[in-house]
Length: 78
Image (cartoon, rainbow, N blue to C red):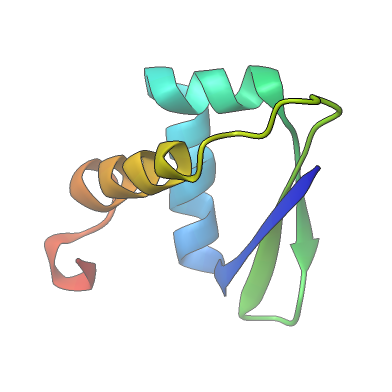
């Protein structure tokens, strides 16, 4: 199973910070092999790969996105 998210490099860096510092991000880091692929000089893609047979509930990604937006992004970007 693979999930991909493409965004500006600054946002990808904030998501990586959340993956390393919040409990939900730590959980994703144990379930997925997470890599970054450069798209161009301003954008990158986070790639979440897993060999799990049971898929991740999409709401978990949604909840993680809320945490990143609330706690890691500047107010102006929300």
